[in-house]
Length: 413
Length: 136
Image 1 (cartoon, rainbow over the protein chains, first blue to last red):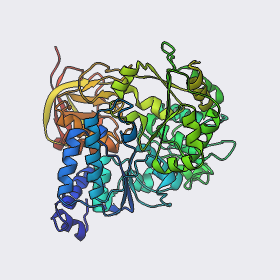
Image 2 (cartoon, rainbow over the protein chains, first blue to last red):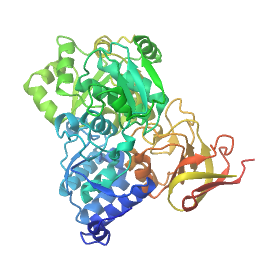
Image 3 (cartoon, chains in turn orange, brown):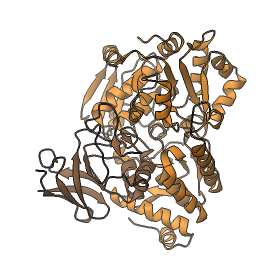
Image 4 (cartoon, rainbow over the protein chains, first blue to last red):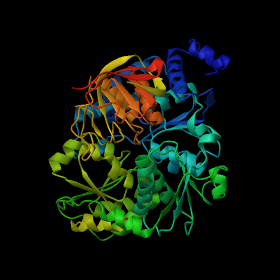
């Protein structure tokens, strides 16, 4: 990589060991991908909690903070694995909760703003067209690249933190024009009335095109998509397809037309998504033994408008005795949802609202599954039904209204 | 038999190959306490990756992989190397952070060239993966 005199000095330790180590690591990553230089960033968003980091990661973080590491740009945290108010009720490990407190304190010493959200793009920071950022999780990255036209690669926890410390990131992948052009086109001929439908589109398009540098161009949809719809589709594309960007003609800033989104290249493939495709995909989820005692609205965290919709659907109903229904969101959304009465309605219905977490990274989730005898997990999130597999749930995607009915009746269909 | 890779990081390592026809995420597929693939239906379900040279055609989503590789290395259940057909930045960032060898891109395709149980040598500087001994 070509380094500026400032970066050479950083590598030589002029700004301390923490900056030196971070830049050295970033150079190794940049050289792997053939990056020629660094680009300055304005914002970082990192994943860092005890469930993903483990004891080794926590020790590393403590040692790193002790070197005097401080963020050079605004830096926020992704959803974490504990809502401390529910630690005991969920049967989570108190010793791990202590470590999580230590980890949070450590991040704050480094000037990280612990927002604990995977919907930073809806509630915290909205980068503008062409703005370079260093974000993770994958759902935040695909939203930043696609909907805002900002520029980020998938930045894992250590990589986002390194970028936060040095204020820059290697210029490869989606920081470069060449990688942002659409590679294949998808005609959306389905109605897509529910958020689960949008996630399912992400699965149907992502699964057969697993490649970080595959960029689908969506077109032909009969109306303007909402932010929550693009959020669910993007999260699923990233999850099933490992994709970091999409274009949606007429909706996203680098796609005024199909031709513009493709950047003058012919599409590698043309895909059409119809209602029949969605119906087949829903029907393909195996129901196992019919267990319907766990319904989850999470992955990504719920926006305020999703909270409002859930409150409307649960109004006057009750989660069936013996069943569990979880909603996860961030602190900002929850505060507003409380003020507006949505949270109260959900809790009156027996729904458990977890703050600052995502269900799939909850500490002790496998044991939770075993202790509760859960076999199936039902959700309207295509992302979560994909990513929770290692905890050995049988997962089933259903539309939002169906999920609410399943939670309240205990009947799976 | 030698496979050339396009990009690589890490020290020279040798070990037993595990060849997968399915992509990989240490978060979606792996039990990070045992090092065994536990996702139901994964083509390697039940297989331990500890100390293995792992061939995967693709990487799956998952920012958390960045910490997960360091975590499994700390727990001494990590593979020795990841040989990806196509990967994503998280896998690379995570492997480099953990000091695990990683490569991307292969010529020829390992299908039919390397089998699970073969003993292979990964030389990142030479951009090569060599089969030293066939699984008999």
